[in-house]
Length: 105
Image (cartoon, rainbow, N blue to C red):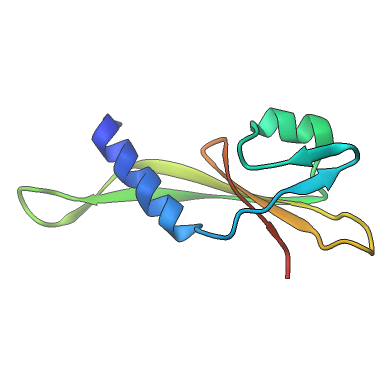
């Protein structure tokens, strides 16, 4: 996938998952979306639930104007239950990178 296409995909996906980014505590650690997925899991342990889906990356062909599939992206939703006194936290991961952290309603 070329750089321009990848940057366009990141922009489209970022708009789709635009949320108020939050941080939360895992024991003595504060977890934010700037962390790697490995850091998050090492501080918080495994998520209590997770789901994953693959989505086609589609762009408009400059020559024909038709939409075409150029690749795929993986979107994961990881949830950590934090007990009865705290709302569960939902982490959205796109292609292995944390994109958002929010409280589950």
